[in-house]
Amino acid sequence: MSEQQEGEENHPEAGENFQNLGTLSESFNYEIPCMEVDPSNEAAFNYVTKVLDLSGFTGQDSLGIWYSDNQPVGPSVYEELEGCLLLDPDCSGNSGEGGECNHLLLFDIVNEGLLEIFGRSYNYYPRPLSTLSHVHPLPTGENVLYDVWKLISWYLNSTISDSYISLNYYVSKDLSKYDGWMNLQFDSECVGLEIDDLIFDDLLEEIIFTQFT
Image 1 (cartoon, rainbow, N blue to C red):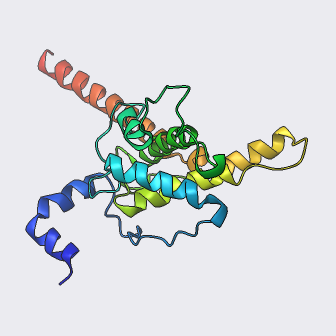
Image 2 (cartoon, one colour):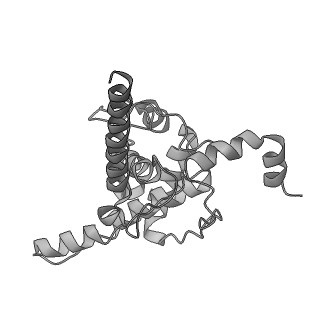
Image 3 (cartoon, rainbow, N blue to C red):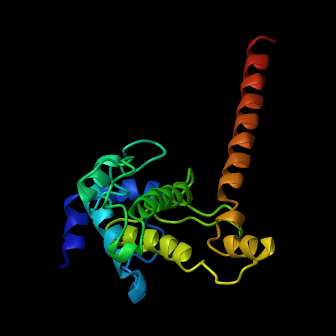
């Protein structure tokens, strides 16, 4: 019996909690995808790995413990890795080997990636409500690193040598990143909750009317 199966038997309530978040849908695949890192981006990948490991986001808890609502990874992680304050302009550790990767920029993108992952993973209802709805599981462990690096590598590969790039190029490239811009799960949930409130109000009015007539 695998360790995962033993954990599920010893802690059945954990499975119920994950199911409430839609993370146990049969269509989800929890295997860690294979990450292919371009040799030119190895320094950036290693730094991102250190940030996520040190902050605890690659542990077994879903997206770890947040520093604040809009900044999952706290500045203390950056300061511990670099040996200087986050906003110190003279910080010598603010670039990678040969200045190829800016650690402060990578640190900010890691936070942005975690916010995006949480935003498209958390749902009020754990199953798709329409054909244009997408429900993503909350990643844990190495899957967090995979999702964050997928976003960062998109940024790293977005640089083009052409002197002029049209606005349509950037718009089309941004819209092709994820399915979030056409994900109607949140909108469907809002409509469903509004209908639920309307039905409840109508039933309440009907009960009150029958009681006093």
